[in-house]
Image (tube, rainbow, N blue to C red; front, side, top):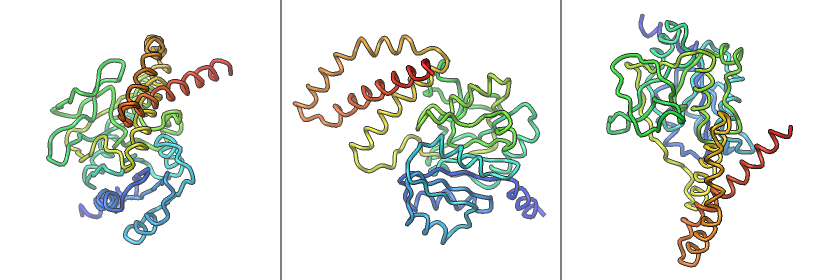
Amino acid sequence: MNSIRNLNKCDQITIIIVLYKETAEIVFKTLQTIKNFKIIIIDNGGDKFLKKKICQKFNIEKYILNPKNKGFSAGYNQGIFMSKTTYTMVLNPDCIISEDSVILLSDKLSRYNEALIVSPRSFDEEKKLTFSSGLLPENGDKNIIFNIDGDTCVENTLGSCMLFRTEEVIKKNLFFDEFFFLYFSDDDLCRRIKEKKGSIIQVYDASCIHSHGKMKVKNIFKRTFLREFHFTFDRFYYFFKINKHHDMVNNFKKKKFNYIVRIFLKLITFQFVDSLKIISKLIAFSKFIDLIKKKRDG
């Protein structure tokens, strides 16, 4: 009877996974435990060979190959619009969660009427508790790991694994802001949920295994640029949205000449990766200034 109940529950849940430069091995590990749910895959890398491998092994509801990488936020939104089930979960491709934990999350969400998002606790591969919920960026950093002892209302939870009611997200326009490419989109979503007086619940008995912060791009220069550029831009944009970016902008402007000098020194001493980090931040800052000018002008 329990297996029949689980299958019925699985039909009510769609899981969205956004890929970019993933290996088949990583995706297979994630899909193995959730294969009974409806699955939508958005591949921002447009990898036809990976799609063929995955579809030969798993039943995928919809598999979209995007010709251009528009970021995780845009990919998640693309999948949410396609979801036709009562519940939708967004899940990182390197985040492993059991079928029982997914079903438990949906049960909890149906029970907590004020909750708009529920999420599991997160552990690393050595079963050590890792950061998965806590304060919003303006109220604290992500070095503090909350060790909850029951279902707990939190300010913020990671977008690596969160479950919500599909219809509610669409009605309340709680999509991910697509100006966030890689970072801070989950923080922004959680902040907007709090503004709507909604709750975010971390469920104690639901758990996942998540490899935090491991970019899959192999080329060290490309990996460095993507990480530094997007983190800098997304961070500026997050604080711009809550009108707390002024000090950050002024401090960056004051240091701009020093940054240029440091780039030159790094280059002549052959520290190319370190120089690229600074260059990436300068380009991101320039793009951010252009964006806020456009927003204020139009």
